[in-house]
Image (cartoon, rainbow, N blue to C red):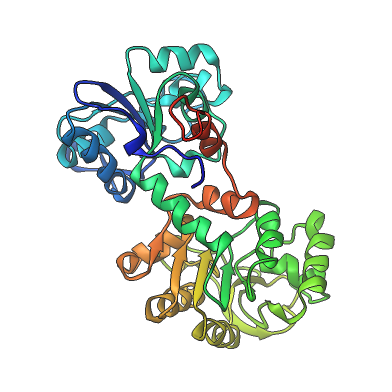
Length: 386
């Protein structure tokens, strides 16, 4: 939080035009009459405290967000009209610009695009934690041109996640899953210097298992990361817990999405037979992981334990969710699929904190800073003179 300008660091906002960068990259679905509607408004609701704070003080508030990946040109699939309609219900009077990524200058951090974006505005607020690990124009450009501040959501994200870096309650246990080892090896190495136990599940666990000599059948393995995984396990010793059993899918099977897929599943202890593919951590692994969480004072969870979209392989992820809900620890969920797994079971409000940014939360824990935060510290009104 040091040097980060907050809303209170803006001068009187009454009558001033304020641009608020939000992260309303929300899922859409087709509603009645074929009209697209917001499927999950969690991120919109998370941004309301900042929008309301500004509006209540007389500011003319305009929000700006990206939506999907339109590749730098208008695409009707990613029109923000459904988001604008939901925002109008939740925060009447707050405007919403068209999708920032309809212009190639957004992702390219084009100064000319920044100039167009801030034209006519008197102040800027970044409340888009989930996008603040990107050096995009709307994130890093405006603080160099306008008095700027972190919004309430961004402030809270940095406060909670930063607390994991500086003074976590002990024991501190991290549970990390998901698919790509390459995306998370850096944060795993960083976490290892801070946590008391590191539990590794999900598809990425098979690269770790392969690195320590376990046969993983047809499970995904990132061969480029085998040496890094082996080194991490060797350095950590018994502080790293890997799966000891697996719920695997037969060679002729397929995973389902929202419903059971096809094929036989079976639990294997140790090696997975050739052709079989790991889909979830097994019951003994669940028992060990839950036991490790039982005495924790702080828990950070990012990434599912298996293909939880298929009910046959959801037990491990559900067990982690249940363990967090029943824990007396400070429980922090790092957004992404972990947050989706909680929301699927209506448990989001029963854990300590759910981040709105999966990738951003991991990068903050790995590097201790984000491009969006650094840009705010250099704003003209930042504490210390920008």
